[in-house]
Length: 620
Image (cartoon, rainbow, N blue to C red; front, side, top):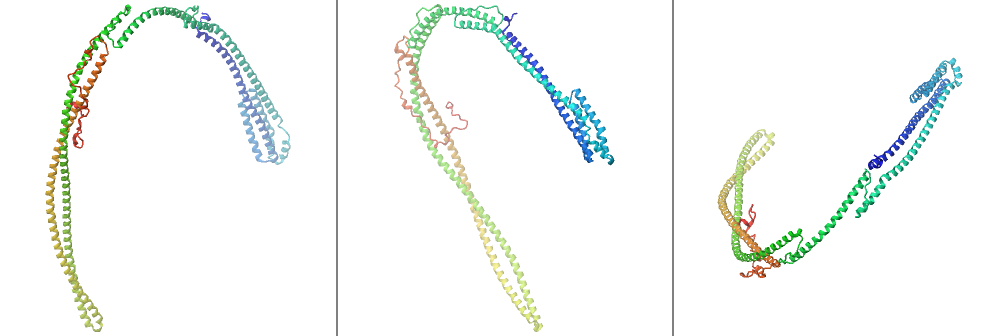
């Protein structure tokens, strides 16, 4: 299969695949150089780290040598400790540098430097420090320590520094070369991709764009109705070839459509004749002329339509005639219903007036009975209050009798006390007399005592007199208490009689109140019955009003129906469909404009519907 016959998707995929391959090769080359740059940068980073450690090693070596000279000159233990500490730090730096570097040459140079430093310590530094420990050899050690014997070791360190600097310069050169190659690869890949894109665009234009442009022009001409356009199908098996073959089919379909349109135009002419004829007859039918029918000749395809139209007009003509006759009969019946409704309305109104008068009389009777019942209830309440008051008075009288009894008992106790005081006064007087006798026997020595005995005797006599007076007052008080108790008992008896009489009055009033309640209940039942009768009368009146209104509406609608039916010309005599009955006088709606007056709500308290009553007038 040639490239021309490839599907468009495959052509586009191949073009993009070429571009992707070129860009992929470019990316691989760039990635390769980028990896080399990254590797060189990493090696240079480690080289800088090793270089920093080498410089620290050189500095640490100088510091340890300085500590050694300080120990030789000052013979101070602190310099000796600093020498040992700096030695350990120097060894640690050398070990760290060996672990950091990956080049065998650098490792070997670091190992040689460590060997030289150890040799310097063992052959120079340690012996000199040992000589400073003895006064005899201290001066010699100081003299020898002034000579620079660190030259070979420093030469080793300098070789190490120079080698590391050379390695860093070499890595920098490698990074620059790899970067230059990466830039060259980017520019080369970009140019190659642009050239490949231009070549692929030219190929796709020849293989896809130009044929599509030709097809676009052909489709435009076909859409404008030019079916003479060249729609030759080329020998191609891709989408463009399929589209060319589809356009050939579309062109053939368009030619067939043109032929069908010419045949449809001929059918439209015949159809227009039928439509115009039916339109003219429908216009006469709309004006109410039901006598017209289609007499023109129709094509065979529309013969059934002509027959159906003529049959429908004939049926409609018969229907309108029947409607006119039925309207006249219904109007006569509605007039009779309206007259009967008038009579029934008058009778219903008379019944409602009678019920209203009866309800007013019973309402006044009910009010009087209810007032009497309320007065009886209030009287019973007052009687209850009087009974309660009398019972309270009896309770007070009982308390007074009890209080008098307690006072009488207290008086008896006081009498006993007075009797005791009288006895004490008598004994005191006897003692005073004995004392006076004894004082007389004593002569002058007992004269004062005799005076006192006389005074005591006088006081005893006065006590007897006061006790006598108190007993007399107490006797009078007891007599008054007995009299008061008798009076209170008489009051209690009177209150008891009053309580009995009030209880009898209470019973009589309760009986009267019960009778009044029974009469009020009976009157309420009568009122409820009259309310039910009034409600039924109101429902009857509503039914009469509805019947009368329905009869009037029916007469009006029948008249309107007859007038509308008279607008149609059925070919029948006009008098039959428009005649009006004259057997009854015209209705007078004004007699029924006033509804039956309902009973006043204040006169009939029980007119409201009972629970569960839905007020449906059909129950009546």
